[in-house]
Image (cartoon, rainbow, N blue to C red):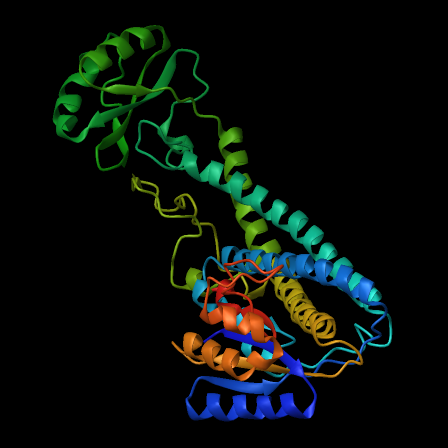
Length: 424
């Protein structure tokens, strides 16, 4: 299970014996795997300052957990082509999260134990705040890029009546730079292809004979060209509509089409190069863009790439800057979070067990489906630490001053929870 209980008990002889009894019972009953959790001796200060730190650490714990969850989700979003490999990219100090927690050692270089507790907490808070600030700016830039790309992609979705035609047509499909002639694009239902071929020349005067050509199809119909004199455009549109042929309002602008294609290529390149470089899926021939519901097949232009299929031969493998930043700073945030848990154990142990500082912290990893039984065992073994509260766990009707009737989350020992499943 990716769940841990971090508990502490006083370090006197009686409670060390209780810890040994806990280890024997949990091992024999296969309830959990237990290891000592080393916490340095900090400068305690006053009890009043510890009470204030207890509240501050509770808020910082919640903030750190929320931050690493958001960072994990960002990794999922960035690794859209390789979501199955997200777990192996969520590491702490180069090892998997479970190993880091079970092998935790306090980082004296980063968080010196000799400085006052307030200073250690302040260092952690500033570090996490800076990571959150950077996360917001980097993900905002990434999301802005995604929104722009999605906007361009939407233009390539839908059927021939609504989607952009810039990626379908070419210069050769049109009569251009003519004072008298113009080429129109007409959408013809598939069942009316034969009718179109028979009648398009007679829909209006001055239609150029044999000027129609099918240039693209979707599941509903085809896109045909027809060339005629400019002076009969309105009449032709009216007659075509009466015969269920729909003229698309489209005028070929080579510069505009070139700009749109270059913009799409640039955005795709930015997303790949600046944020994620993953050629695994591309090598298999998958589209860089999301699949569209309507497939449009351009006809007669085999050299023109379909939308979303840019030249990928130059694409390399590796990680883009955003993914690299997320991996490094997720590790930093996770490490800070576990240090915060250690600080909470220290502060709560001193507040509960008193001075001088003397307690033993233990990390328990409950086995599957054993959490209820494990809690009962711990409450039984350590009930002497708080006889009244322990008794209330067996009798929910007992009211303890300062303790709510709903006390299932209260323990006679110091207890904190680390749940790695939140990152799945």
